Length: 525
Image 1 (cartoon, one colour):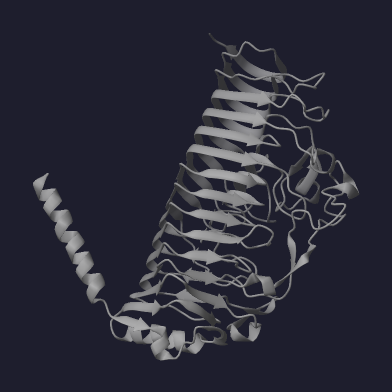
Image 2 (cartoon, helix red, strand yellow):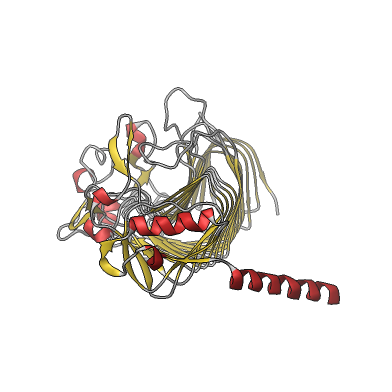
């Protein structure tokens, strides 16, 4: 014990010595002006360059509002924002660096674009502010068009808002892309910083290794579309902890992209993304609190999420497979999830947990979702849990252990209820479509285990399309142990459990179970 204590004391002293004696480069010494008007991009870049060229150290941002366009951090540079310091994005697109991509014309980088750097960090109690108020029409909402809603239960009335903008999303103007990008970097750290009001993705790590995000406040604006919180794309060895993330689009996205439309920061690199830990975070989103996967070119695996709260979100956890990349070895533990319907053109339909594997790209062999586990999860939502595979990509080995689901009524049922949202898929008929709703619905899933799953209903639910407790179809090797639940309270023909087109069932449930074309059914005590 003594030797360990002595080691820690020596280590702390060395760290303190390094901090006290690190070179400091004050951006005001290089011409930056904190008047909230003068564009100080060139001065900030000079400070960063000087720090890098002199072996590294701290670029210091003192209190005040410094307006900036695009600048670039470099290796061995710590950007430190003092309390009261604000780096505010310019209101003028011309102040940001432009880039072109074939088929997409001219676009613009955001405030920070860091490429191929090592030992780089942003710390301190200050703020980076994307100034999104100038890049959106906040009095107008982006609505779902009639063509997209034509297969829904409500047709033209889907997500209809009689007055005002409802839940947004607000309408974008021309705007910069990601506010902060680290691309192909190693040993990256963000700590204690506030990232506010991004006009697009807020914080993007692409092809990075050894990333630590701890204790940040990230509020991009719940009405703002595409303003994700943190996007982790094709990275390895990532830890995101102790943070408060509130975003219009996905609060946290973990994906395997090597490119993605016109968005910058990608390098076309083919490699596995793995070893990602998320813990002790509060998340809100009008899309998904946590999204894993989408149009992934690279496989993503070994993701572990624990001790997080997801509230006020259109989806809680969303796992989406649409391309060649697989999604493997994923666990969620000790979480609370609360979801609700939101109007406007947001992806998500009130599901606390959504897993889907359907085609999103033609002429590729789809990857697979496999080995996903939920432990000690408390869900409360205005829609049920959805697991939706396909004959082209069957979901494999999903386990629910000690999961509770409270299905609540919604004031938006008339304009949103009774539909499944699989947007991002290729088949237009599967993007948004009418469907009966169960407390948990599993479609094309092999190896589903429900262990101590508890389902309760709001007794005021009266919609006829809200039906069964659990519905499972097109399955193999289903296990249901210690299930507590019933059909929906107003369902005349609903069942606690209904099974269709499956092979291999083990259960100790005493409830009446409807079975249609099911083989290998075993009921045990």
